[in-house]
Every structure is written in C-alpha cells, then in structure tokens.
Length: 118
Image 1 (cartoon, rainbow, N blue to C red):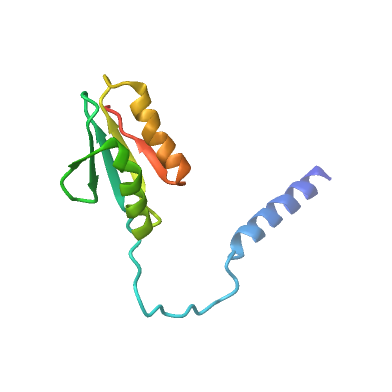
Image 2: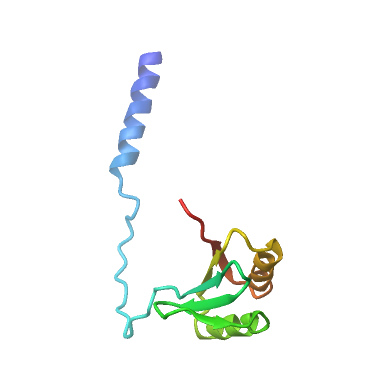
C-alpha cells in the first residue's frame, strides 16, 4: 500500500513539473517609445566641517547651503520621481546633520541609502 502511495506521489510530482507554468500564450504589443529605467542618484556629501555638497548623476559635487538642501532635492525629485539619495557623511560630524538629511528624505518620501567604507 505504501508503495502505491509513493508511486502516486512521484507521478504527480513529475507530472506537475512537466507542465509549463506559462501555458497561456500572449502576444504582447510593441512600445513606441523607450523609457529610461536608470534611477537618478543624488549624492549628498557632508564633510567634517558640516559643509553640504550635492552631485546629481555623474555631475561634479557642488557646495550647497544646509537650508537650501531640501528645496534642491525636491527639484530633482520633481524631474525624476525614481530618484534616490546616497548620503556620504564624514564619521566625525554631529549626528544631527545626518538626521537632517534623513528627515528630508522621510518627509518627501525619497529613498535613501547611507554610504559606508568596507
């Protein structure tokens, strides 16, 4: 009896794996325009003096006032909603500077990653 149950189990396992999961054939339409799937990275740098710099994509980092950071990042987000922030903060700065950038990202629903050394 157990042999019969085992054989049935093996049969159903093999039969279920032979069936392709995509049995429904769908002919998808072609898209007229190609979209850019690259995400924009806004790199926010905070040096050991508390000076903020921002680089977008492959641009060179430029210094920005701490008070202007949120408006600047919102402008980038308005151009590309998939944008995310990479925060490069010196280990010797006050934690409140990092929290300021975290708050900006959280308030504006931006994705944020914190860069570290290996």
